[in-house]
Length: 183
Image 1 (tube, helix red, strand yellow):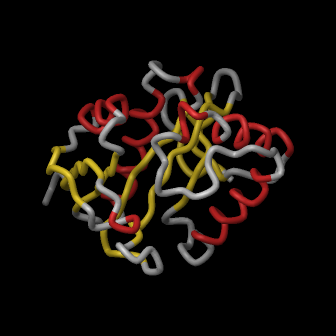
Image 2 (cartoon, rainbow, N blue to C red):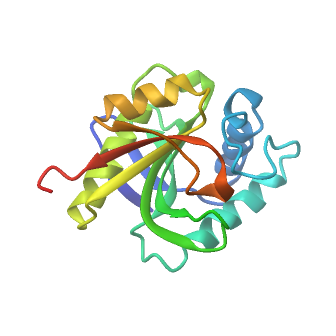
């Protein structure tokens, strides 16, 4: 199901289609992607069957969200190629067992898609949609060594507020925030 569209992209649900599962594996088996995802256990993937489990986790995480939040595929309109993932969701607390009221935007792209502006474009669309739903602030939390993702957060107009340990089991993360334009 298509969630959002932009000039170049379609943001849609990941599916259990073999092509989607293969792409999930291709993205999340790469050390250059997974090294920044310390909060996600089981990465990098080492077996294609793990893509099925990852998809199930995403679907269960968002089952009660009514489509407002999600972990969505980023597809290039012109080619149909899935280049990565954009997510919009409540951040998990320090104990990781409950959601906070803090909303996160995030992105994970295949290395072949780096440098094309897809992360910024996809995240900008997700943020605009969430602001329209009434959220006042949206966070991006980034591994301290992930300079490219910090650059995306800055391109989105997010303000760096330092390192925080409020979420994801207390992991130390560079934290960026964007306030709704009319706030």
